[in-house]
Image (cartoon, rainbow over all chains, first blue to last red; front, side, top):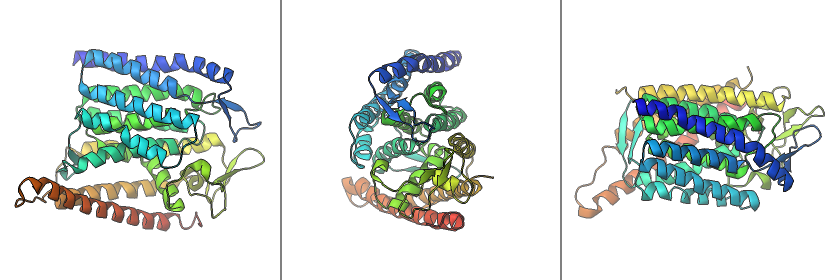
Length: 331
Length: 77
């Protein structure tokens, strides 16, 4: 237990300071290479560095190696390889605009290390009712879950600070759930995801100086999914992702097909003259979480919408922790 | 409160997950095939897969209905 406590201090600290110290250099390097995108929601349309994925993956890999030196477990290796693959998928998408199907399919392939290294348990645990054994079907669960978690975090990355702030809250709930279920080593890795996201949030929050890009958002989402599978907390993890899942669900049910956001001409939100965001009444525009928050109400600032999403995520996180507590209860 | 209906939606989604879990454990888990030798696992997994897909489709259908019911006043699309 003493070793776990020491690791629980050193690993997240390594994760935090790696991202915290590397990101300013990354911002400068990206700006020097003109690797910037316009922030359309900002007065004057500032140019923001992108992608921030390299600093996130650096924090994850370095802290992961530190954790591995404490606990040489195959589970840690599998999560790190899967996350790294997701980073490269995102990097390809950052450099070149790919079709709507590219990310779900490429992300599905990143689940291969988890399957090959056999670091999963094919029993799917549900609260109150116990477990269900699905040996072959579980392979599909692994592939689908990795693809979904990566894409949902990517699709919620629409406002300054939302993806990283969202991940701080969701991964905190996941960490607490893993501790409740006594999966301490995976909880420490989940804690490093919290601190990687927290350090990045410092630069990503409104007004952003860097955007995570696909490489950053997919890295965070896939690592979250991989931790959920290896830590055997799939249902709990899905509950904590509530607002992001709703966002993807609303988007897909309004578009009725898998499509890249950038391919849709009609925008779900518009800017007012004083740079506030308001929901559009365009029937061709997709329905998204942000549009839902703004629907029927007055225009809000980007920062305020971010805080509404964080409140929703805290609510989902509480439900996920309750779910974890209910795992020990049997009807 | 801004987004209060979304809290209701998240809660409804959570309840549906728990109910879905109950159905999965009570209906899916007991399914086992014994008369086909080495194919037992594949056949029982196939049946479980079909039921799971049906469950997911019904879950999405119910969630769509809940969405329309909760948001029909705020989102006229």
